[in-house]
Structure formats: C-alpha cells, structure tokens
Image (cartoon, rainbow, N blue to C red; front, side, top):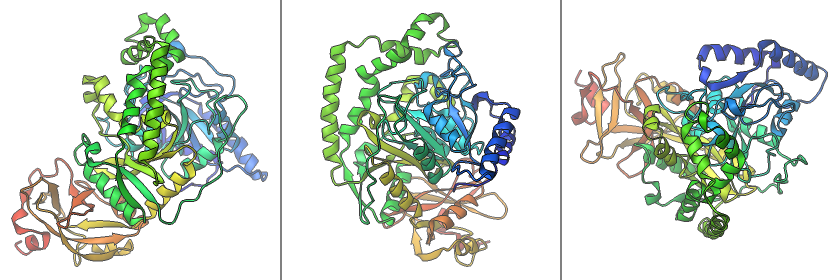
Length: 559
C-alpha cells in the first residue's frame, strides 16, 4: 500500500533505517543528510502550495548504472566512473512527481550477473539471510526495498535482474515491455534488450513508479508508446510449464509452486500445462549465442583498455564474459536472429489462448559460498525462466508467493509485449484470492491460537490429513509446539484441519508465525497442496518424534 507522509519524514525514516540495518554493501554512493533535507523541504513546499505530486512522501534508491545528477555513475567499476550533469529520464520523471532519491545502489558489475556478488564494492547479502545471495544484477536496489530503507528502487533488467532480486528478497519486481520506460541515461548492458525496472514492497507502488516513468522522451530511439489498455477477462487461462520443465528447482520449491498454482485456481483462473521448450531454448541464446557481442559493444573497449585491473576494480568473471563478446562474427548474430524468430513463433503458439505464463521466478537460492565456488555455473541456474523475456519482447513481473524453509519464494507472470497492465490485474486477483491453511497444533479448534484464525476471518473447511510423507515432532520449546517435517514416501500421515482465510487475514497470520516454524507447502492425502505450518531447519534439536500418534490432539492426551 502506498503510504502518504511528508517528504521530510520519509527522508528521516530512510536515514534512520540505513543506520539500523548496517548494510554498507548496499550503497555505492549516498546523498548527504543536508542535501536530502533541502530537497524534502522543496517537495513539501510544493505540496503545501497545492501542487499535485503523486510520489511525494516516497523515497527511491537508484541502481548505479542509471544517472542521477550530482552523484557519480560507476556501473560497479571505479575506473569507469563519470559524473552526469542531468538525471536519467526515468529518474527525472520520478523526482518531478515528488519522489526523493536517497542514493545509488551496488550491482553486479556492468549489470552482468544474476547473483549480486560480482562487484568490487562487495557482495550484497540477502535481506533475510546474510549468508545467501541477494540476487542481481540489481542487488542493492532489491535489498534496500526489502529492508524497508526506501519505498521504491530502480533496477535494470536484461536477463532477469529486475525480477530475481525480488524473488529472493520477498518483494515485487516489475519489468515492463521494452521501450515503455526510456533508457536515456542508463549505462547499457545490451542496449536493445535493456529495461528499467521498479522494486517495491507492494504491487501498487511498483506499478505507480512504472507508470510515472513511462512515455517516449525524444532521446531514446528505442522508446515506444504504450498501446491501449486491455482488460482481463472474468475467466482467463494461465499457462504453466510441463512438470519436466520444473526439474532442478531447489528443495521445497516445486511444492511451493504447486501451492501458487492452487492459489491461481482459487482466484478463478483456468490453469493449463504447456510445453515452454521454445522459451527455454531462447533463454539460452542470451549468453550462449552471439547476443553477448552487444555486451562487448557496450563496455568491452573499457575492459580491454584496462586489462591490468582485471581481478581488482574489474571483476574477473564479468570481464571474461564481456571480452568473449568480441569473438562472434556478424554471420553468427544473423544466424541467432533467425533462430530467435523461429523460437518466438513456437513460443507464441505454445501460449495461444493464455493471458500469461506463470512460472517460478528462479530455480534456487544459493549461499555466497556456493556462488564463490562456481561463479558461472551457479549464476546460469538463476535465469532459466527470466532470460527469454526481453529477447522475445515480453512483459513480466515477479511477486512473492510464500516461504520455503523460512526464505522467500517468488513466482513470475510473463506475457506478450504491452500486456503490462493485464499482468498487474492478474497479480492483483492472485493476491486477493482466499488462501487455505493446514494447521496441526495450537491453531486447531479448541487450542490456544485458534482465535488468531477466527480473528483473521478464517473459516473451517474441515478435518484433513497429510499424505504419508511426513514426520511429526514435539518441539523442545515453550509453550509447547509441534513440528511438521516433510520426509518423503514412507513417512506418516498427520491429522490436522484446513482453514480458508481472506488474503489479508492469511498475510496477518503468516506475519505472526514465530520461529522455529514457517509457512510452506503441504501435500494432503487427497493429492492437493495447501500452505501449512512446517518446522524450519534446526528446529528438531531436542525434539521428540511423535509421528506414531498421528496428530497433536493425540499427543496432548498422553501428557
């Protein structure tokens, strides 16, 4: 929800939060407190004079490959740095609407990477678990929003950089159709594929930022005018990948995606499986084909002229990728363009009759150590569902879809060019859909926390049991709590209840879940999946296995 406050209060809140979180790796440069206070005073005065400033009271962070006048643009490399005299078009439009830029954020150097670790300014740590990656390349932007420092952050997206950090940090990431937001004042990664994106903690704020930045500016030759708004049908069809095209997801993510699909059905969508192999093949062209030559065209000359800095100011992995872009010949590019045309046609046919494609946003959430051990291989896994969108001229947005093992899980909606507002409507309907929750302990009828479900608007659907794939423990905590853990075939069936809650009530219950519990996907005996209370890793220390009793009430009867 978009908050309304004075610009001065918003700036003060951002500065306080920067000090509280103590994450210096988020930022490459910050504006001074005096500078921010002066701009906030000007914005508040304009509002007091009756001027309509739709973004007044909102703070913004800007990825440091996007120009902000008065702050150095580095694109993640000090040797590349320059000081722009004017804002990028996207930034200028936000500021004209009353938003205040707090600073410039860290990124995978030259926007080359999906991990957030390829920067001489330091790896950006995840907002939820500092041992894990933030996702990139818009790493600092995503984390600055997730940690509540700013309301909106700008990123760029060529291969998924405006969506992967959203998924890994539990926020919204909107990647509009190419050209809707001009890239004037943006250091290119791949000029014909780059898109300015927006992160926020809610869809309405992210979409407001995108709408504010949209429109031809007369400077970007690739900028385009939006087409007429198209309304979402009351009954619409969503495509999802074939089960085999979900192989390789992190543990628990396939189940979390199944729960998201169930939510889509509860929101009134018809969900159909479609073969998206053409899209996945197109995704591989972005780095494995001749398109990488455009990265060399962007900054290859700088890297080539400063080879002595590779391994220092110039990230070794990034330099290797970009310098390799000098190898493809012109005929290689034209062959890939022909291949892409064929894949575009096949992809269009595969999604015929569907308003959008629903996928996981990415495939896993590695630790910093895992990426350090295999920087190229670990990164390549991140872009399976994101890399094709810009190549095939598609719009996309990433939204949170629950948690797995206490970490955010996200899904993504992708549709043809200029379906941006339709995708937003789908996400809004998805978000408003009632959620079902499987409870096994203190939230059962007659138990101490059942009142939370009732107060949240919950309705009892009925008694249910899990599939026989779980273990059940009495945790060594006070007050007593059970811990449900998925063990796979050969486990036990555990009794519980299914409750249905409105979206807002479900969110309130989830927010109140204390460690060592989390919300994940639970497989029921009838084959359906719903959200449910699960024990987090480490919660079983000192716990007693009570699986044989079959449920919490049976356990309580024994103590």
